[in-house]
Length: 118
Image (tube, rainbow, N blue to C red):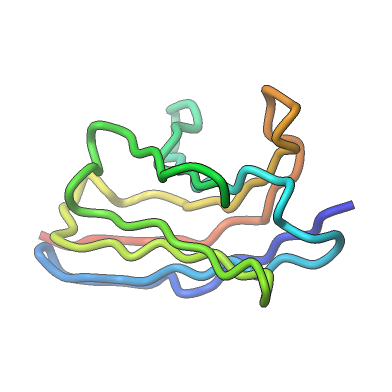
């Protein structure tokens, strides 16, 4: 059982940066794909980025080149460095995990709010 807790959200001006953290507890993360998702009111949750220790990171087109996902599996931490933030990046950001053999994310954090002001 993987438990996830996000932190680092807040209010930032357009063009600014924020780093989100995700602390995981439970088994080793080596066999889990870790991801970030975001959701705004009235919209479905959308994929932002993912990472797996044996492969490169994946990004949504909307954030590629601005966001960087990293993980520290030894300390069971994952990060999302968000740069050049825009008002449309405003959302609740969720940390998620899935077994590398699974196609669905089945572990989720409670989310952290990121608000970008124009």
